[in-house]
Length: 611
Image (cartoon, rainbow, N blue to C red; front, top):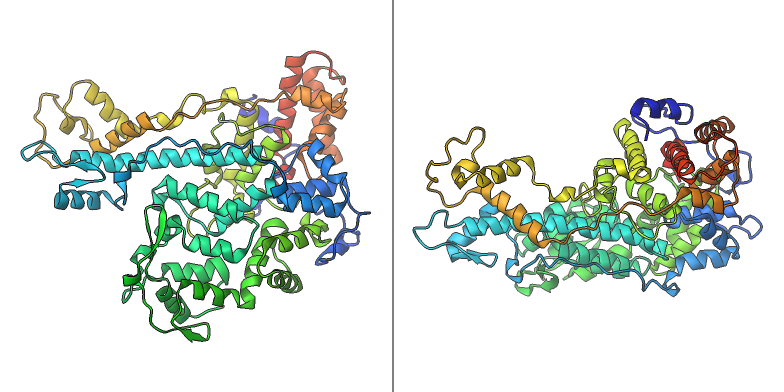
């Protein structure tokens, strides 16, 4: 791949990045204000068969999934429009048995439950009981009697973090490979809606279980999903509901239920939060199982949203769902996710009515959205900034891959771009939209595309997740030189290796080092492989024989909005220059490199950042 200077010289005519503040230039909306597409705005009547086309089928796959190959789009566009929507929404009829379940590393010892919230708490338990997390303290008189417990605590942290990354990669692979894209797209939506992070849960098993729960209920009944999530161990831990007990209610659970999960700010009072929290007292978990602790439940009378009674958590959910604003809040959020920002008041009202009349079944709502003329209107097409996950997954699907490559590293890429799976920034999830783009992340998006197309330049060769942080690398080096633990873990010059060990109960820095080492021994390696595709073959199979036809195929395959004529010509000229001819010729290696350079420019363009 060319150097940075060469990259900007080649890309400058194509990439027009008008950054007002930190906002991405958005391509002009498809069609004019007077076009037929513009007249569809806020029109929820079904689109006609006469309007159905290849381009609209591509839009459907982009939003209801992660995009598709020309063959997949054509197959969908060949169906009657109602049948095409049904195929996307009623995906259970599609066989997905080839998708692999997560291959666990067996890093969790049963005695580690319940995992202490901090090293200090692990030490406190060990002092009181003589053991913690399945390991005992050393005999009296031993050096660092509590060291095994501290080592195990840090092992739990490191192993869970590494295994969580493996879960995220497994999920990414599933998004790329699935024949049911809406299932995974909705699972991703609910992950952002019911946001839960490994940084606090510290148990990959709970996050994996929650991921499966979100998928199971992805397009089912919202009440069933809501009840499942409220009883979900990961959510109970994340929102501290184990601390929500009679006489001392913790309001985290009740507040987020109302503010973020169901009704939205301004539709309840602080008293409603307190009363809802009382109703959820005693909802806790034993490791991976929900448990109702009756002794800690407040069974007194509550007053909630104008109703009075001895409500429990299930009663609270039913009262919430009886509020018209709940259907509007959820349907509007789904609309913003799948269609565009800023739904009009009339659209909100109509979608909420569809949702309520379906008794909170999600499929009728999704079908109404995907069938609507509004979904295919000018402001709705090719105007949504792709999230980092969608950017990468859609690239892989459009390349026709059967799974996510591990070179470049998916987790490292999305983390740099601002969206690490299973690590949402807070309980509100990712803000999305224009927040995905800053000057830094825009440049990083280009770097990510470079790593996909030119993996030999990626930093993901080898196993970067197995590298010790520098502070622990120094500890390992010093221990290998024969230093004792005291000197090996000192900052700066550690002095002579002959100095005696300190008299201490444990050494935290050594525990951190041992935690990494133990985790690396047990967590399964991620096989490293780059994306398996040959762009020259893809282009030739499209029937392209000239540079102009090759560019047209790449643009059609990867963009949902056309390039300006001058930009298209720049790409044609670039490809012609690199292969030395207007004809594609027979030099396969030369053509492959040239096509990847051209596709690199396409994938870095503003047009590719939206879908």
